[in-house]
Length: 383
Image (cartoon, rainbow, N blue to C red; front, side, top):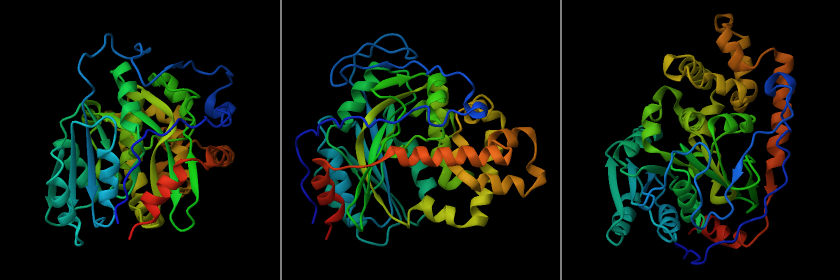
């Protein structure tokens, strides 16, 4: 049964204390102890002045954004995800759902929902074409200046759109606006707060500051509003990078145009072993090929401007020992650019990976709050 969403906005969680210098090592981060500056937004609920890096001037019109949602056989959960969108205090310009050849009752659920929601548009692939093709079609169909791509089996928390809209209205030059999230273990009901830790307060980070603060982390696409023209310039989701296509696209846009960060959870997602990326990375042969394709892209002319930022930020630590093993096993990959991206030599790489994993666990905090009951009802008690 689809649960009703709470109507009231949830309160801001206190920011967890995470040492942003955890991964600062001499080779990867340089010897400087100076932290990049970040100008905070004092009140993201109301008007704020444009921050450094944003284009001059304010927009008079409200922020227009699209929500896109690929769906494949989530008929039992998609209405909950849609409820979490349409119960927001600020609504999007449009919501587009692409059903990717589902074999369950997804289409019937969507048609019933669309009959009562004029903002919802449903399109369909007759045959399943996969997550990357579905997302790219949705990106091309979307008309909003910013786009949020959201899974069909997760939820947006109350007030999320209002917070993101305020940040992007204040910083219209930003490429991305992202936030923290909750991860829900559907077996145990355990709730974890995944804190990205780019800053202690809501702020805009220009490309250089974001590069310094990434420290091996990533940009979570399911909490990210991305600028449509910047994503188009990055090539949307590149099919040969498969389950890492969003990782590449969102980091590229952030490295080029900067990022707004909201240090509180604005979404909750379910942890499950059959996720597209989780399954893909388990297949070593396929993962190796995807990594080869990814390295090839980063060394190409299209990404020449951001490749140094992928190196300096430690972004490739996302792949832990997968990249080490691949590069070290193939002398044909021992060119300077690949070795720079892989952060070799090996002894240093192992040390950096350990520090990166320690930082991840520091940022994953068990969460007990008023959200627990809400998220449990929305994500765990589906009949």
